Length: 388
Image 1: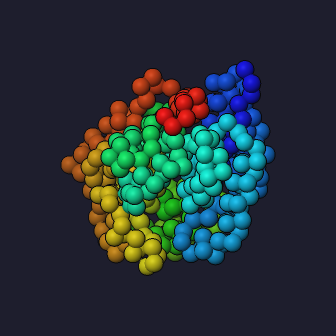
Image 2: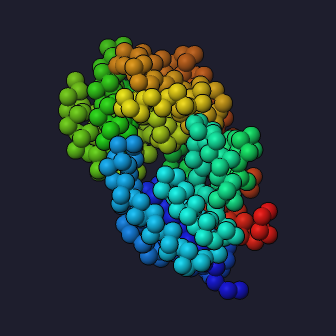
Image 3: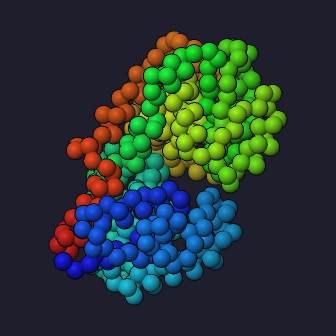
């Protein structure tokens, strides 16, 4: 069996983590006979990828930051596509970051029209700009979905083949779920409230004051509690400076282990919209969701076609978790919603019942790892006859 050559292009930290697991899974599926090229971060480099350039060159989020770095991004797109075309691999796998990776894919498809191209992590075609799904058929042969409702969305929108391969968080349930002592801590006084204002400076700057005000309102209603705020090194200084303005600053912790330890003991959470809401949901922590964007980005709300921006709500098919966006995101509103889920009562019970259904909705048929399912779908796509 000749060595399989796979080009991988990831554009940010989460994609780098997915790419590293995928590289291991592909090697296992092919008994180690796989060579890789492309773009990735530290995790993928640890698996043997020599990235064409640092992933930080393209890990840019938001409209204004992208515009500011547009010339460099366009140069990186050209270089990535040209390198892949020259290498003529057996497949190209683009991983998340669609503003970058899809532009690479279109260039590669134009030069190598029969090369299998797989998109690992669907763009949110089900939320906004649904026409992208149909357009993707021109340069994507298969989409590997992390969310269980996405294959049906692609069928409805007439997009490329889409396969649910599982969200990587379903491999972390042991780290998310409390043991007996931690479960008792969830019910003990004073309650532990986990606060998650986001992983980007823009999120932190927009939400910290409202979150602090919400905790003040919560204390006035339920009495003492312990607030724990997990954060990341790149926003730690901002978080500490803004948290110091709160009436009672929270305990700030760093690292995934400390974050998950807080989740396992938390009675409730207050979180910015993002993957962290799914982490909390799978940990069985009732929460209140919130989000604010710039005035420019706010205009995009007219293009959004989903009833919720929280991943657990979308998977459940109901607004089980209260969410407060833009002008509705106020200390008073957040605090009142927190009171409802910290206290025993109908609101807390209803949310706990809803969260308990996530395991079944997100389960894979054979219980295998998402990366193994992704590797299998990639190999099937490579082996399929052209045009199928």
